[in-house]
Length: 220
Image 1 (cartoon, rainbow, N blue to C red):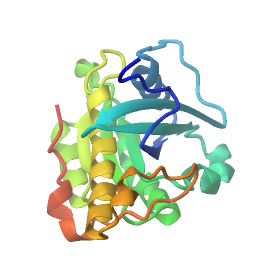
Image 2: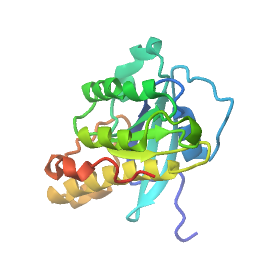
Image 3: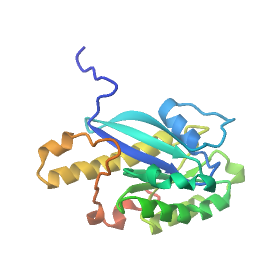
C-alpha cells in the first residue's frame, strides 16, 4: 500500500522522562498522551513504567519513548538508569499543591546532575482543571520557567488540555536541535539516522541563549 509505514519504522527515537513529586499526575499525562486514557483511580507508580508514541514533524517520523517513574524517595536508587540517554524531560507539579512546586528546584538539580546540560525541559503545571483549588498561579510557573530557561505549559490530564501540545512541543524542539546540528555538520545522512536505544544524543542549544527557551511561551 502506498504511503504505508510499519509501526516500528521511524526516523528518530527520542527518550523523554517524566519527573516530579508523587501524585502530580505524571502517569495520567503519559496515558492521556499515548492512549488518550485517564484513570481517576490511578495508583502511585512503583518503579518505572514507559510507553511509546510516534508523531510526524517536518515529514519525519519521531518515536517518543517516554519513561515514568515513582516520585517517592524510596525509588531514588533507579535514578541513573532512568535518566540515561534522555534528551527531553517534562518536570511536573500540581497547581493545587504548592509544595510540589517548591520541590521543582530539587528535581531540576537532579535532572541536570544526571543528563546532558542541554536537555530540553518543559515545566508542567498539571491539574489546571482544579480552578477553585489553585495554589500556584500561572505567573509563578512562568517566572520560574523563565529564570531557569525552561519551556512552560499548564495542562489537565483529566480534561486533555494541552497534554498533546506539551509532549509535541518538547519533541519538536529536540528534533529541530538535532536536525540543525546535522545540517551544521554538513552530514546529510545524519538527518535520517536512527539513534540507538539508550544512546545519549549530544544536543547543543547554547547558541540559542536563554531567550530561545523563555517560560510562558506556550502556557494556557
